Amino acid sequence: MLRVKRDQIRAIGEIASTVTEVLHHDAQVADLIAPLQRLTGCDAIMLASRNPFGDVHRPICHDGYSPPLLAFLHRQYLSCPSYSRAAGNLLPMRMRDFGSTFYQTQVYEKFLHPAGYREGVTLVLRGAGEQVSGLLTMNFEHAQQADDHVRDGLDMVAGALGRLCDLSTEPWWLARRLDAAAAAFLVDASGATLRVRPHSGHSSVVSAPQPEAIAAARALLDGGAGHGRELRGYVQARDAWHRVHVVITTAGGQRAALLLVQPDSLPFGLTRSELDVLTLIAMGMTNKDIGHRLDVSARTVGAHVAHVIDKTGLDNRTSLAACAVRDGLLRIGLLL
View 1 (cartoon, helix red, strand yellow):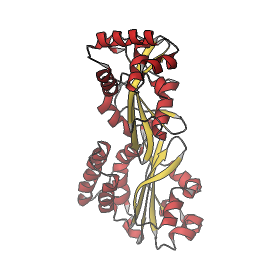
View 2 (cartoon, rainbow, N blue to C red):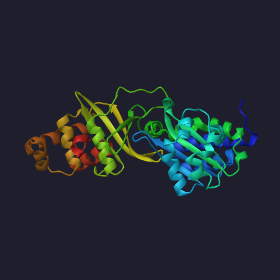
View 3 (cartoon, helix red, strand yellow):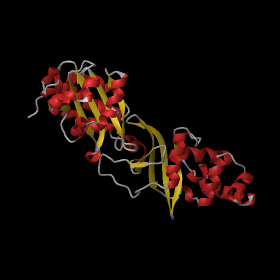
View 4 (cartoon, rainbow, N blue to C red):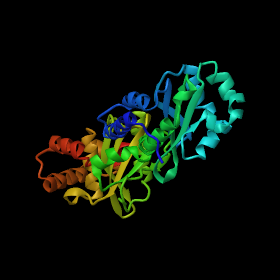
């Protein structure tokens, strides 16, 4: 039976609603600190998300910890036996729950006791698929503060906090807004990809992004694609085309590229050659420059331009360039 005080129920509701607002980009992660403190009465708090690319944690909000203790909690603490025990327990773990031997550990003697903390809570957070997504730590100057009401209250908000910290699900809200039908992936600067797990039963026929799409995401992250924080276009996958949308995002405090991929045909009945010419027009090239780039004659390029104007119904090269950039009528491979 849950032992939650009446005044804690309001804080629990506020935490749940704030998580939703953060995921919808209507609130800041730091807005969670106050209701978490009201729920628990803690004197120090850290919420950290786990980066699945590198299996490291990074604080996304914190209050009350000194810089050395904060650094210890999201780095060295992860290799301590007490963290391993907490990771194997679904409930929040207090110091007392580890047994009397905890008070002889390096964690307590070197870091917590000198800081004046006599009790603490470790809650290993889980996201989609019950995978570890983050870590919540709290410490208290008075041991009696971390009672069973606090532990049970934290257990009630653990799911929401785990979802917030899960890098594989948080970007789904953004993906759903941009293109709900597309397959969504996170890409880091090294090119490692992570499938974004939807909150519903959504599925896509795209199981993995094409190398050109990953390269575009990396280029956007590096600032080398010349398109700011967003890039749209097409990549060819064997005999089919994929529409690609790349957006730079901050998921759980980590900078990454959100890559949306959706099978699609080229608009206006364009051929690959015509898409190539349109892409290079958008890059400001003349027919002669385009011919050199594509290894065709300027006359052939002129014929392609005429066909594109006829198919799109646009008037001139300036209109073609504006349409290509605005609507993502670009072949990604030519931009890299």
